[in-house]
Each structure stands twice: as structure tokens, then as C-alpha cells.
Amino acid sequence: MQISVVIPAFDEAESLPDLLRRLVPELASIASSSEVIVVDDGSRDGTADAVLALGLPTVAVERLRVNRGKSEALRTGLAIAKGDVIVLMDADGQDDPAELQHLIAALDGGLDLVTGRRAHRNDRAAKRLPSRLYNWTTARVTGVPGRDFNSGFKAMRRDVARDLDLYGELHRYIPVLAHWAGYRTGEVDVTHHPRVEGQSKFGAERFWRGMLDLVTVKFLTTYTGRPFHLFGGLAAVSGLAGSALLTWMLVLRISGETVGSRPALTTGVLLVVVAVQLGSLGLIAELLVHLRRARPPDERDR
Image 1: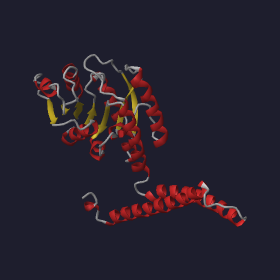
Image 2 (image 1 turned 135 degrees about the horizontal axis):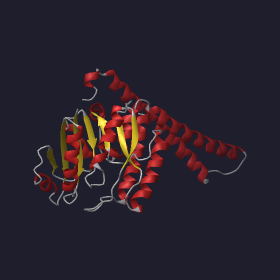
Image 3 (image 1 turned 45 degrees about the horizontal axis):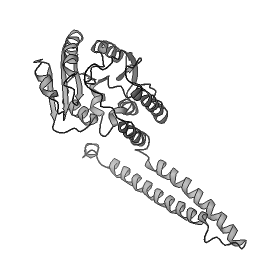
Image 4 (image 1 turned 90 degrees about the vertical axis):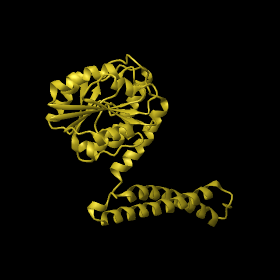
């Protein structure tokens, strides 16, 4: 078995060397062949140089000229990873390389992707509390079971990595994307260490960007093949509400009351117009899906 470990890194020159010194021997003990790919995501603190200075033959560095975000860094690493099993780890040193054997054992047990669930998370409350809300919301919106979707410590079979298309903040939803692609996903408890070196890159804006991408994930996993179910449903709600208001205005007008200045009239007209627009958008989306499926399979992704 060959294992590839992909580590996205942004300004982690202080923490990466210690992580790699612990990781490389661990890989050698559990795999016949291994590689570590550090994706330097536009760091300005000499992260790549710090890694190369270690002189570890199984560790390679891929540099991005500017910071493109964790999803793009992972996408870059996954594209060049050669392993039968691909492991994702954060560069902050909080993931324990000794837990790799438990992730691999879960794959051997039948899973296609396993997430290292941080049972006792060693982070400040400003990170833990939003993360709990995010995990709770993600599980209920997507219907995918899990308690730590955002853990950066994951192991997957090569087929899963090949089918992932990461951008934006979609790295947070790797288990969801894999689950909806038909792969078997799960979690195992792992040790989570406190950060010793460097500073966290977590900010409140990342939480809100992740929540917005949850809408994207829900659409991609539920409505990609039937977009009119979404837009048509919204159109029906808007149209019914607008029609009800306009019917009420008509009854009042017939009874002799003046309705031209009533806000309900304007609202009713607006809701009906929105319903027509949503319905039209849904039909156009259905047409695009139909045209794509009508193309030969080898041309659909061009």
C-alpha cells in the first residue's frame, strides 16, 4: 500500500518541521511506500524553505505564488498525489501522526473516507462554539451523519480523491460530497493537540463563508439533476402568496373599497412576478441539464 499525505500550509514555518519529523517515521512504519506533499499556499514566512531545509527525501513541496485558500491548495495536492490511500492533514501540528493507523484501519474495515473526529478539541472557545453550530447545521441540512465535518484530518481511497472538485470553502464539506457521490463515509475519534507554534488562521469571516457554501453544497448534492424541483417549489410558494393577496384585493375592490394605495396590492404583484421569474429560471436550468445529458459521456465535462 502506498500512502500520500497532502498538507496545505499557509505561514506555518514554525509548526511544520516538528510535524514532519513525527509524520515521516510513522508513515514508514505502516506503509510500504509513502510521500508527503506540502502545498505552500502563498506563504510569506519561508514555509517552503523550512520544509526543504529538513532534507527529507519523501517530502515534496508544491508552491502557489499567491494565497488561494485551503480548497485550492488541497485540489493542487490531490492532483499530484500518487498513493492508493490519500491522507489530509493540517499544518499546525494539532493532528497526531500516531492516529494514522486508526484511520487506515477504518478504511480496511470498509469505509471509503474517514474523518478524524476531534473528541476532545484543544482550541479556544472562539473556534469550538462556531464549529459546533456549523457541524450541527451541516448534518441536518445535508442529512449526512457526522459531528466533525470540518476536521482537516481525513483519509480516503484514491477513487474518492479523484471525484472531489474543491473550490471556495468546499473543503469543509468533503464528507458530504463523498457521501452524495455514493462513497461510504464515517468518523473515528482521534487525539487533538493544542497548537504549540504559530498562530491560527481562523477568523469569523471563514465561518460565514462556510455557511454560504453550505447552500451551494445542498444545491449540488440535491438539485443538480432536478433544478426545477427547487426553483419550481419556490415559485409555487411565491405565486400562491401573491395570488392570495391579489384575490383579497379583488374582493375588496368589488365590495367598493379603494385598493390602489394598499401595500398588499404592490406586494401581491411583486410576488407573482417573482414566481414567474423563478419558474422560468427553473425551466432554463432543466433545459441545460437535459442538453448536457444528451451529449456523449466523454464530452460532458468539456
